[in-house]
Image (cartoon, rainbow, N blue to C red; front, side, top):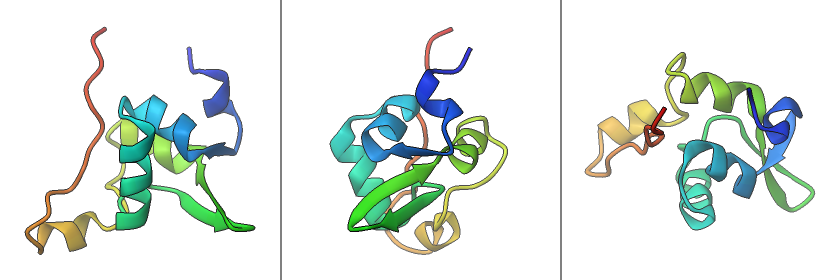
Length: 84
């Protein structure tokens, strides 16, 4: 079952980071680097569209900027695997 945050079309970066299993600061780092799928800047704040994020977390699509990250000396961030 998905957390309630994942059922809304837009979620906060903190909620997205929690779903990805990383800290809030890492979530914002991914947004700034262009690697958080579905990140949008609205009214001076960052949000994440939940559908692209969930697809990425489920391995169905690459992160935004994954191709760009592969050509630089920065590694592309990815979701942590959660214990089941």
